[in-house]
Image (cartoon, rainbow, N blue to C red; front, side, top):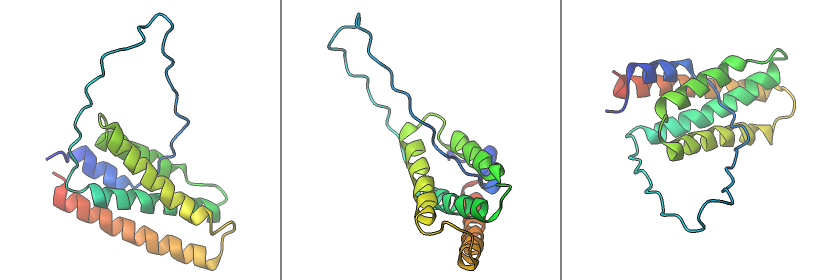
Length: 145
């Protein structure tokens, strides 16, 4: 299986990743107009991809809510998620994009609802954090080495 010890460690770290601006490569004027298409690498989904996407979405929500209610912020969530994404999707850009999209979906879903820290924001953060911890343990127990 694709899971490794570093994967399990990264899952337990539970951190967030925010995608930075993408850079595009311009084609040189000297390059021929028609190039041979580069064969696309086939990415096989891992059996835990759906759970990993849900975990990414939860982490996005928790990251937003914890930073909303904590004036000091918590950059550790972002750093740990970055490690998880780097470990899990090192050579698979489509899987990476799906994980980042799931994180962003979770982050934005709460950013559109909560602009100040409220009791319901604190309660939602606790529920999501518990779900994320449970999911991380399940993924690591079932697929980790």
